[in-house]
Image (cartoon, rainbow over all chains, first blue to last red; front, side):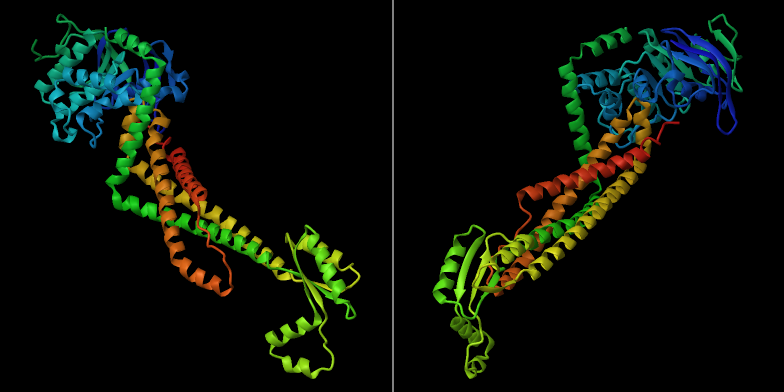
Length: 233
Length: 320
């Protein structure tokens, strides 16, 4: 589903964000991307979103080579990918419902169809009763769930998340991860950047570890696998 | 399977449904961007007022030109060619000639004025009746006053030259020079006002362009989010284009209203002035089709100004 082939990214200032990254994420797979701040997690996700382009190497998403994608195709490509941001990226002058409806509005869904899908997504994240409220009046965890509902409302094949639990307390963070696992179970491929090792090692999925822009570790975590100390099962 | 379900849904959406939702989408964006303008009434009104004033000036010029042209047509009808007759002409013959002239299509009226009538008129209008009476002989020649059916400087000149060939005519005087001057003057004003209109149209483009640029800046965060979830440049641009068109439409409506008030204010004095000249000339207003044209031009200019601004500023905003 996602394939990085010897990908490097150097920013105009000279900062080498990624060096020769190679990995492949299968259709329907769920993986975590971890590493310290500045290790290149966000850059990697931005490359998949085509918010940045690689300086070297090639990225394939769903068989398509991203470096060959003409700029007018990019919006249509992005519609097939759901993204959850750490800072939510919500529109604060619109209510919960309108925020979630945005991707469908852009795609030009008929209203009744859009309404149905928005309600389904809100139901999934447990915000159906708050659809008329403004995001600013909701808690951080609820705002994050609006972001998730928006990311999945047009049923993307791939869901990316950049530190989705960064600002949440452990209990809420676990809830959010649980939600992601549910999406993964219905076939959505997922790549989630998180530095919350204790949380992600508990969820037995593949973990890609970045260090200084290099992919230093790639392992499928099972209960039997090596785990950092002090993590409860 | 969420993915498969999504694929099936997408393909099952009929072309008609897609078209319908396309219009739904347009309608929604149109009404959203209208509401957005209403949310900042004072800023919106200021912009509309500036556009209105910028459009008022050329439309006032247009109406003035229209009136002056109509007025000059009116005046042209009053221009005339005077045929002075030989001193020894026969009055019967002169009347016959003027009858014959009336038969011509190129001539609207032909009136014979005998030397005696001329002397009488001169006494009345000049107040120098005593001088005429003091003279032994009437010094004034008989004349035929001709009004051409169609007046423009060239054909009137040709007609005058032709009439000079008639045997009892000693000389002709074409009373057209001032009409020609008036026409040249009108041409000058017309050219100048066309230039001014173009400049003011440009001003409207800049006003709308700048307003839209500020609106784009104010909504930068929102634009980034929309682009992140797959909004195309044209989708992001649409509300701004609608806003530009609204500004233009409202500005031109305001210009129409101000022009109407202006016309109403000057109509009284204008009528009084024209009455002094015994003219039955009616002041011309903008009229239905010109009003429609003004609204169309205003809306078009607003849209174009927004388009230019969007092209310049919107594509720069990319999520990063």
